[in-house]
Amino acid sequence: MKAKYDFVPDLSPIGNRAIDYTGHSHGMITISTLAGRLCNANGKVTHTVWNGKCECGVSRVFSSASLRQKNESCGCLNRAALKIATTTHGLKRRGKAHELYGIWCGMKDRCSNKNNPRWRRYGGRGIKVCSKWLDNFTAFVDDMGCRPSLTHSIDRINNNGGYTPDNCRWATPKQQANNRGQSPHGITVEGE
Image (cartoon, rainbow, N blue to C red; front, side):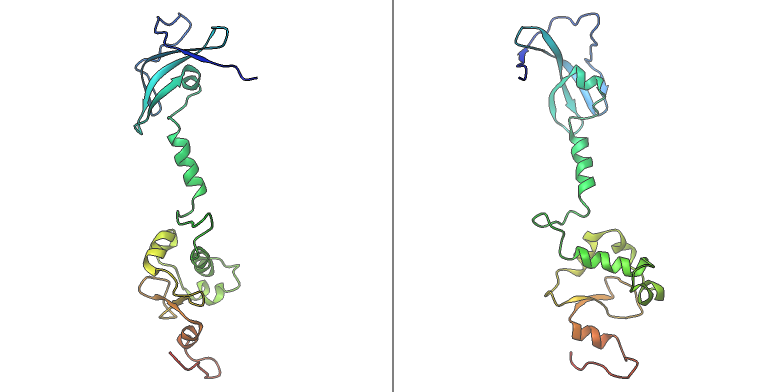
């Protein structure tokens, strides 16, 4: 059974073995005053607690134990680190990757991964992804916008040019076939 603690606003002097954290800084935390002590059901003091403020602006009570354990913040650093570790681009929808994320990854892989079966036709020919898009999925989405339909895919207007905002569009399979130029047999798809 978990012990019940009562808060005692005991501001009496701290014993000679206890550390006075008043005015101390611990990472992003600055301790201002002694808040009191926590006592168990028998009235025995188990924790000393302090009023403090984190650089992020949060004011709260910190225990001596948490300060001894070298806590660096009120928890904001852990939340920020977790967000960075679990978010690749911040554009998830209902917990799933953005519909364009796979297209962006495929574009980069074709141009940079020699083990990609299509690398020879892309990276092997010198086709590159522009620096703006290379490590920034959000910039790619901002520049390209949404796909008009699921049949549209990314198309380079100049087939010898790289993946850049000025050289890319969403195109239908028919538009892409026409954009490939002459096939080895001189046949092109008529249309748009």
